[in-house]
Image (cartoon, rainbow, N blue to C red; front, side):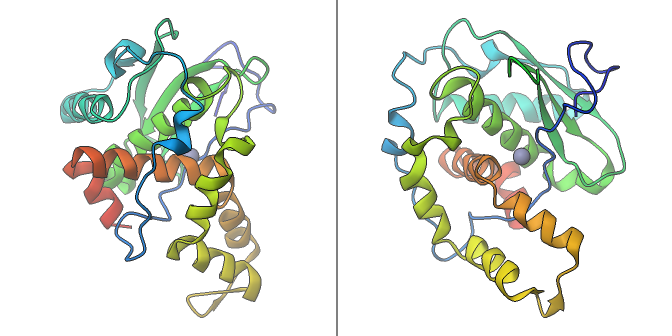
Amino acid sequence: MLYGTRTTEAHPGEDYNCRCWAEPAFGDEPDTKPWKDEWTATGSEQSLSAGASDVFNNQATGSFKSSIKDIFSSIDSAHGFKKNIDVVPINEYRDYSGTGGTLGYHPLTKNPVFIEINKHPVHKDFLELNTAHEIGHFVDLEVLGNKGSFYSETPFMSEFFLAIEETNPVQKLREALRTGLFRNDLLRQDRRNHIRYLLNKQELWARAYSQYIGTKSKNKKILDGVKKH
Ligand SMILES: [Zn+2]
């Protein structure tokens, strides 16, 4: 969330961007879809010669700092970044909430301002997955397609979403909305809203991206996060 103390460029009330909860997973499902480069090829016509450490300023502390370095290597093994992207800090904080991380961006220009990851113990198994997830939002906004818009919202990604729709977790969530039941429990309104949130394109994209990075690079910590869902 973009509140005043974190950045002076944003305004409370206009801040709806990502509140990322840690589900659902796609990676360890029997019907996992292999990633196809053509899904994102039209979005990355510029040369992508910069690396993750050129784009992100790793401000984390302790062992998480080195985990983030590993995530950078994992991402570099999967794709590059456009040159001349403004550097974005990756910060950590601790907050007892379901929000695992945030990509903060300016509400008007959509310029990315920061990534922050919640290091509260309830998220301890998901720090690396959540970091890759927030970087996924950044890639959606800043790397693929036009600056200032989310590529996942464009028609170029429709084939990607058709594949995502066929996966078990997404079908289960759709079924929960249809039937009003989730794991045989009546779906409360807050849970229903949460499921709708999970099924929005930006979230589905970021979840798929984080698993793609984990799988492609065999990053154990990211993959452990996927498994623990
Ligand atoms: Zn998210």
